[in-house]
Image 1 (tube, one colour):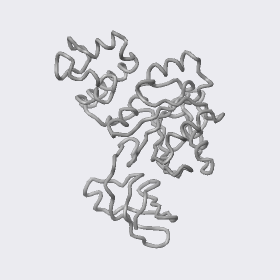
Image 2 (tube, helix red, strand yellow):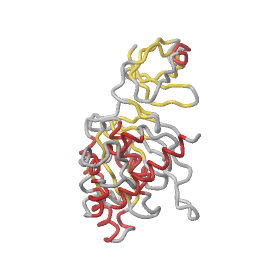
Image 3 (cartoon, helix red, strand yellow):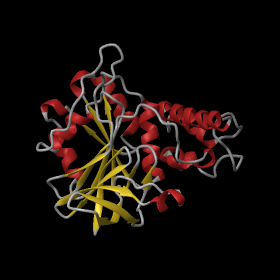
Image 4 (spheres, helix red, strand yellow):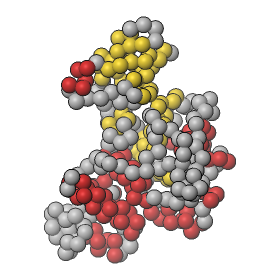
Length: 288
């Protein structure tokens, strides 16, 4: 039978075949091949009984994200809060890099706009307005939900973002019949608590599918190399080949077209800061 992995917990994969969901284990051959079934995979299973089955084969993937572990995504929805918690721009930019590496459209959702000043919202527009599609919303009051629903209609869309930004509240607004569990925000850390811990797919009314993913606050794995990172910052990529050195990393090298563009105000300092922090993280990881 053909099916879709809609959830994975502790080595069990829940595969939807038609109207039936089977709790499945994967054949040992996948481990030998270094392959792990992933939420979003199209698979072939054999049924053991009316409720359980075994995954026999995994269909070719359109794309694969390592963190969060999801496959076959059309649109990556990156959720941030305008305030409470304060925006963590380097983390947001890591998500956007992940989307670009996987050739996936990205939509940046800026939630909790009611808690931020106009200056803060203007800053976010200045940073990301020309980088990706941006939707401003106040999910608790339903503002901006319809705009986001239009963007994901008929697509496979994955939601991700730091804890406490209101991701579950947005999902509840988009999927009123699902009742995704929300978590309060810790007064001490300003981060969410008691939120989603596994990846799961829900069917949207518009015929698409929504992936709910855990609220990561950092990444151990950056899915590209240092020599290619600039290609995943579109405002930096346009200067590829214009630097004096072909392998310029745009840090301290002389005659760097990127740093000249930064000085001229053509690249936002916050985005350049994120780029530098990612380069540094990659170099630190190489030490270990």
